Length: 430
Image 1 (cartoon, one colour):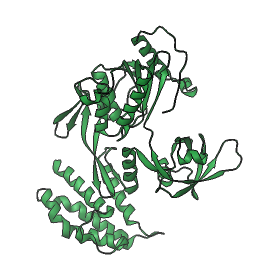
Image 2 (cartoon, helix red, strand yellow):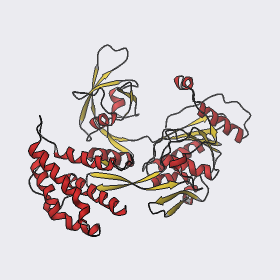
Image 3 (cartoon, rainbow, N blue to C red):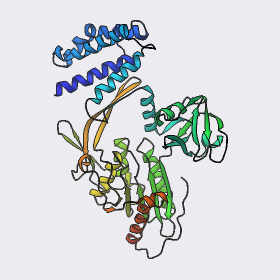
Image 4 (cartoon, rainbow, N blue to C red):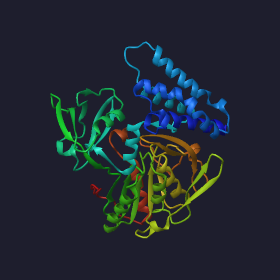
């Protein structure tokens, strides 16, 4: 089984290396489909001995590589179709099909555009217009423009429906593809055709792209009277811990006595950032246990340096079915160490760790381990279950009645001994 897994990985890297710029000196013949076929045909002759050594000398395991090269050649020579075959997309599809056969949706291939977007998200900035998008009834619309962004300066508004990007209609298109179309190099322009409510004719905006810092953390004093702070963390990227530190500093300057950490709809991100942020709320012990394929476990402890600048406060953590991966690590650590109370609904249940294997401009994300909470709970099997279950009704969602947040405020009021009723929400922008 181990040999087969190694084979799959090597084949993935061979195929992705072939079209992503990670080249061997023998793969440089010609261009286009002819170059692709020539290179693939050369695989058995030039690479089998090298790969065979890595597989313990078993050349029989390499027959699928030869089969792939043969099918590729036959397609080029025999396929009858209306358009020229795209060798790049054929090979990308082959890689994705191979990875899909593993039955693990988290092990996936990232083409250059997808890998670039992931890198931008992890860095905490991207080059685009600065607008949050979402989909409803098959239509992509502006949730909100980021403050001081090109989108805001151009006049885009909440609820604007995108009809076209440049001259291409985007109705029914995947939102990720639309995002990639809107993003681009700094200083270049993109044209959006917008349908705005109560405006009869579509409006066209020409917007110049710029570097947009992602707002990963939002904070406010949720209950000014009782000094209950609120921090929403949307993602775990390279800037998240720094922004959490800034939020805590600002709330402390306002006299914070209790804190709500909102991890709802947070899909996760970087493992090391999860350890950093959990260390701000967990006094000591382990944050997470990583278990690799062989069963070996490695515990990642709290970083005590994260305690230097801030106090520990009565804490409530909000979770729901969108709380996943790194968010579950943080929530699970806080719960196991009894450093706070979890409120909401069961988390997503993604207890797996992916390693990103960079292959020049492409990448392969491979599930390499699973993680357990400090108490040894398998999040992938059991999810993170809140201490206080609060399930919003359809009526709550319709009326934007955040019953989970209200329950969190109530719990903290009780913990800090407040007998005063909350009279104002006091929202502010970060």
